[in-house]
Every structure is written in C-alpha cells, then in structure tokens.
Image (cartoon, rainbow, N blue to C red; front, side, top):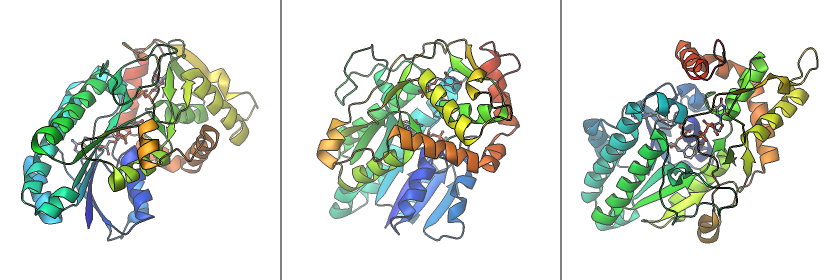
Length: 361
Ligand code: NAD
Ligand code: TYD
C-alpha cells in the first residue's frame, strides 16, 4: 500500500511523514516542488529508508501526476502542497492562485482519472484528503461562536481566498464525480520545522539574534494555536475513519492574542537562553504597521471530529510551546540553513514596508 503526500517537505507535511513512518510501514511517495518553503533537510532522518520516496515536482504538472498515479497506485492522497503565507500572498498573489487553485484542480483531475480505472473495491476505499485552513471562514468578532463546518465562507486575504477556491473544487469533485474527498480546515499550527516567516518561529529566531520582535498593529489579533503533532494525529484519524464528502474542522481550543504569544516566548527564552546582560527578550518587542485586511480573530469548533472520530489535542499550549522553543534552540543549524539570501530579501521586503528600519534581519 502507498500514500501519495503532496507538500511533504514543508512544515506540516514533513511532520506528518515523519510521524506516520514512526508508526506505520506504509510506503509514502512525497511529491514536493521544493519551493523556498520545502526543505529536504526536514526529512533527513529518512535518508536510505525505502518506505519514503521524495519526488521533486509540481502539482500543476498534469503529465507528471498521471505518470505518478499510474506507477505508484496510491490508496490515498494527502494534499498539503500550497503557498501558505498570508503576507507573501499580499505581496504576490499569483503564485497562490497557480498552486492552490490550478494545482489542486490538476491534482483532483489526476486522482479522478486514476480512480475511474480502479475496480469497485479500490474506488470505494480510495481517499483524497484535502488539507485546508480555518482562514476560509474569515474573521470573528469578540464573543462570536467559533467556526463550525456550516459557517459561511468569507475569505479575506489572497491566501485564504485561494484556499477557499480549492476547498470548493474539492467539494465539487466529490459531489459531481463521486471522488472520495474529505476536507479538513485547521487552525494555526506551531512546532518543529516551521519556516521562520510565521509568527512563532520568527519571534524565536529574531529574539535569539537580538533583533526586533515585530508585532503587527496592536498585537491583539487572536489565533487558535494547535501543536503540529496534534494536527497530524487528526489527519491520521481522518484518513482512517473520516467519511467521504465530509468537512472536519480541527483546532486547539486555545485562543490567544499575538502579544501574549510573544510575551510567552520571551519568558521561555529568558529562562532557556538568557541574554548575556540578563535583560528580558521582551524589550525587543516593537509594534509595526499592521497587515492590510488583517483578520482579527480565528477560533475553531472541533466538536465534529471529537464526536465522530474521537480526536482531541494531546498537547497543551504550555507543553507544546516549551517543546517548540527547545526544538529551535537545539536546531539552530537548521534555522541558519533556511536563512538564505531569498529569506533575507523577503524579511527586508515585508518589514521595511512596515516601518522597521533595515528589516527584521
Ligand atoms: P508550507 O508552506 O510549510 O509547505 C508547503 C509545501 O508545499 C512546501 O514543501 C512547498 O515546497 C510545497 N509546494 C508549494 N508549491 C508546490 C507545488 N506547486 N507543487 C508541489 N509542491 C509545492 O505549508 P504548511 O504550513 O506545511 O501547510 C501545509 C498545508 O496545510 C497547506 O495546504 C496550508 O494551507 C494548510 N494549513 C496550514 C496551517 C498552518 O498553520 N501552517 C494551518 C491550517 C492549514
Ligand atoms: P502568521 O504566522 O503569518 O499566520 P496567519 O496570518 O496565517 O494567522 O501570523 C500569525 C499572527 O501573527 C497574525 O495575526 C499576524 C501576526 N504577525 C505579527 O504580528 N508579526 C509578524 O512578524 C508575523 C509574521 C505575524
């Protein structure tokens, strides 16, 4: 048996592949374009492991996908591949439309053609798990109930709009063609191997380097944080027992304003990596210009996946964030390796525009 994973060299995908192969011998074919966000070093522990094959390729390449399905004959697809960073989507939305919309369409079509050639049993057993985000639902006001699966889609950023479009395609391919699609919409993840352009790793990396900690606007935007290992466990349950045609929202039940997250990270770093002069990392906090169209609050109601599939997060925020800080402290060579010229260019573009002189790097 084989799983086809797309985007398995990125943050969540690589955590999924590593976690899965620590629990199961099922072979994984990992298709990843290795963009700036995809890093084969995330999968270094699998070097020489015949259960894992990394293929550098594009989900927009229909001929490649046709060949891959024909030769690998996967029993399921876990579709992680995407352009995933809101700020980058504001600076350059085209790549998001290409990968998230065209790429998902191309992958759905390849899966549909492959499944059509299977016998009834294989067709029924096949799964296409489309990994998506809670950001498709837009922004909540204070006190509004958390997003459940019937919430209206109101995406506000080019990123969330492109993911919303991909969700609609995935839904339609189930409804119209009977492809056994399951859609998951998850809240903000954190943990090992997250590229340091996202809030939590960016703050850790900047704090260790003594650079400014750039908080957008007033820092009171709320996200629902989930440890990446818990997201991977939820996806494993969905693959195993999820119902085709169903949407499952996944969340940490852990709403926190950004400023609180940054203060928590500073306190952990004060303890685990104190500055030479013993001053707090919190003195590096700098408020910068806000993100255009910044969503104020996300929160997920994960009641359906809890009730139907018995999933709940295993990690508390206290335990997960401490593990995460420890991982970044122990893996500074990984961080240094991903801070290429392209990374520095991005940081300068994003933060100079927000009034942080010289960027955050
Ligand atoms: P990521 O940016 O770290 O990884 C994306 C991966 O996709 C990279 O390895 C990249 O090389 C690959 N990729 C990009 N374009 C490709 C293409 N055209 N063909 C093949 N591969 C391509 O993203 P992530 O944070 O790991 O997110 C994975 C998925 O989970 C995404 O679909 C994202 O929308 C979703 N998601 C992320 C979060 C989060 O907090 N990070 C939360 C909910 C949902
Ligand atoms: P991010 O990690 O980019 O995830 P998302 O936009 O998908 O939620 O950002 C999380 C929150 O942190 C979001 O409200 C924007 C904010 N943020 C900052 O305040 N400063 C930063 O430098 C970054 C990258 C994000």
